[in-house]
Image: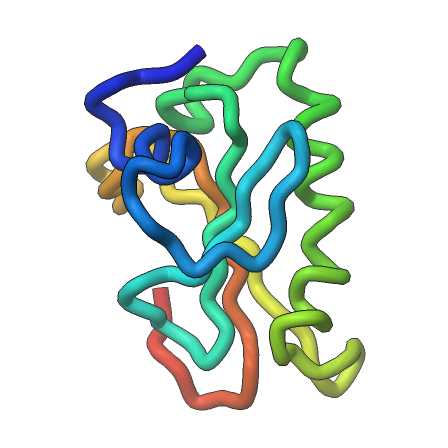
Length: 118
């Protein structure tokens, strides 16, 4: 499913440029244009899902693949290895949860601290 008014759907479709770091049949990963950390990637499913509040059991395999890909993406993009290094995964859901783009996405943040909290 694709939402023609969705910013991330437009990025996935190639209508808006992005700094892509990874892509497969299920997801697109690109650098955040307003990074809150030295490494700040957005992991976006190609399927339009408005938020985590709309996730059902049928999306479990997709989300599992996305989470399983995160450690390698972190290392490949400048995060230091665990346990001294590491990264943070964050999913904002809804207005009160800080979600700005209503297409499910996982923030991958890392790199040397200090960096913004949130």
